[in-house]
Length: 251
Image (tube, rainbow, N blue to C red; front, top):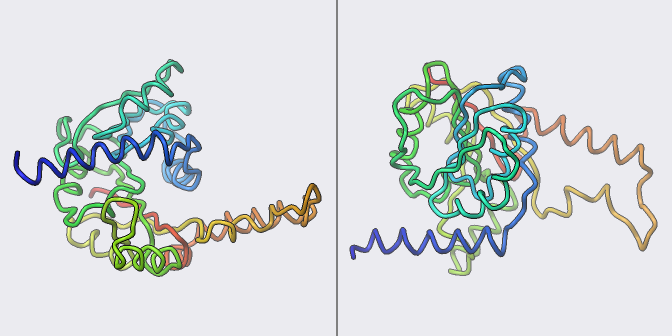
């Protein structure tokens, strides 16, 4: 068996264990979900959405609940997605396939998105080209990845350098990287935003409690949370937050 095949099997086993045991969250990524709704003016019913590297399928599931025809594609975790979400009788299809060889015809989807995927590809050329191929003209492609200029990236880079990073090889993306993708593949870069911060406790300081006593009054916590959300929906967040979210349009 050739080395590249061995690596794919090893990665497949890794991600299956990762999402089953380590990172088994079923809470959708609210920022990405909100960006999709905003971009399409909340009119997503009946539209065809493809999530590549769906993991637990939580984002595709939520979009299906809002009426989209969701396709959750993953190379390793289809059993996890089916076990959790297939009992809901939603317009959600689960496909086991490779993101570099999508089993769909050209111009099939209204929107294609991924979260935490592209950073694991040393050369994402084929991954991006396949997404563009299956996307309708005027359709949207959303890429969400770790953001370069963040504390998280410093932490991650140090662990990779020390050969102590627990996940498959990973890089980060900057706003400039997203602009390069736009130019290289003749896509329109519609919007750049960012979300969250690392260490994660910083993001949740306003929720802190000492014993059973809340540190911040409820109204102040709500105000802080509102301001967080407002910041994450701005362009500066793409340069400062833990993750960067880029919306491209096929023109």
